[in-house]
Image 1 (cartoon, rainbow, N blue to C red):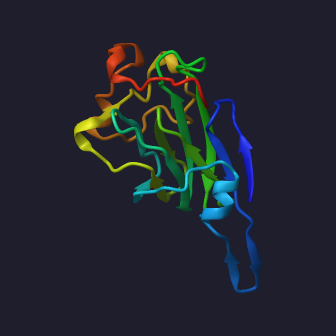
Image 2: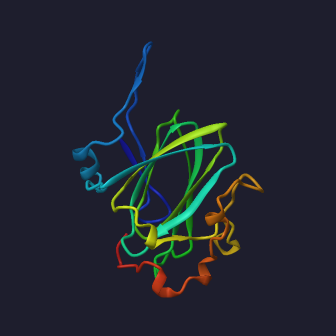
Length: 187
């Protein structure tokens, strides 16, 4: 397994070792000892799977309090996965990382607590799996506008398909400071 740092401290790209032959392929999508050695979380409380069609954009979601860390992978298809640092007073506040994840590369993106997360489906269909460090709490869920100009995100589509909830997301500067997670001085 290879773990790559990104421009946002704590956000990591994980590339598993894939073994293949004439029958197909095999890889470990998570293994306690290896992920612990890499400094990644080992406590996961919930796994989620979503299936979407081309052009669907889900996000940018975050939960505060009880922020979730997420380990994201595309089981089928290809997505553009995005993490945005929304930790108040963080030196990388408002910055983002975008990574292509696909069933072909099997790469994963670790999005730590304190970051908003979203993805856009680039293939005809995609099935996305993500492990979460905290339970989903709908009463704490927040939506950051996917098209907030201050974030300078580059989506390869002009009119994505979004839910009513995601379409009503707020710009980062519209959130009161108390609604955003705090930066604790670490990654």
